[in-house]
Length: 332
Image (cartoon, rainbow, N blue to C red; front, side, top):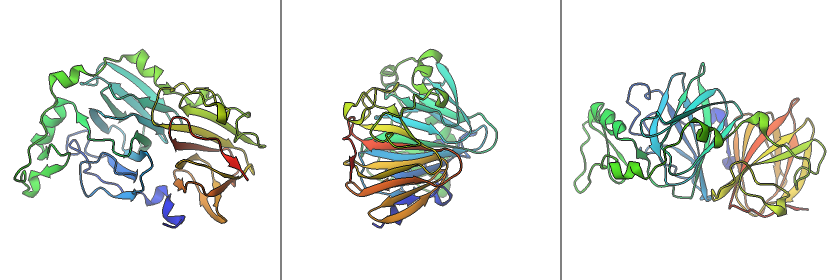
C-alpha cells in the first residue's frame, strides 16, 4: 500500500445510502454512511471500505441532511464521535426519551456500550460526524424494537448474521438463515437509563479543551496538545481526559499555529489523523502529502513522520491511536 492509498480525502468519500435496517424509515432515509478504516458495522455487504488494514479500532462517518435521524441502537464496543460540522442532538434510551444533549462543531462525545443512543442533525444544511468504534471486530448493531417494525413495513429484513434482505427487490431470506430476533425486554434491561445530566458527562465541548504546551508533542513553538479520550499517560506527559475509561484506543487533539512544525519522530502504534480544520503537510519517510479539512490519514507503524502547518489560521487535528496507554514518540 502506498502513502497515497492511506489518505482518504473528504471529497472522495464513498457513501452507502442503504447501509442499515433503518435506511428506508421516514426521517432516517436520507443519511449517508461511510466506512473509512476497518469493516465497521454496516449491514449492507456492498458498503465500500476505504482501508481494510486492521487498526484495533474502526473509523467511520455519517453525513445527514437537516432533520435526518439515526435510529436508537447500541454497540458492543465504545463509540466515539467528533462533530465535524453542524449541530447534533444525541438521545439516550430505547425510545430516545431518557436523555438528550445538543453538541456543535468541534465537540466530542463517547458513548459506552450499555446505553441506547440515536442522533439527529438539528442544524441547518448537511452535517458530518466522524466516528471511532473500538476493536477490529465491533460486532453487530443492536436495534431498538420499533426499528424492526418500521424496517419490515418498508421492505427490509435484518438476518441473524447481521446482513440485510431487501424484499422490494424480490430478495428472500436464504435457506438456512433466520431473521434477527427483535431485541428482547431482557436485552433492553441490560442497558442503563441515562438522563440529560449523564449525557452531558460523556461530552467534551471544544471551548473547554485543556490545551497544553507541556507534552511530548507540544514542546515545539506553536504546538499544543490535549487528551480527549484516555486515562493519564505519564510517558506522554498527558493527564487523564474527561472521557478516561478504557476504550482500547486513545484520542488526542493537536493544535498547530501557522508555520508550526512537529519534527521527525516515530510512533509504535497505529495513528489515524483527522483534520478538523486547517491545512497540514505530513512527511512520512521522505514523502510529503498535503491534508486539508475533513481528510483522514493513517500512518504506518514505525515510519518516520513530521508535521508542518501550511494554512493561515489554526490547524486542529484529532488523532486516534491503538491501546489505552500508547508509547511516547521517539524523536530522531
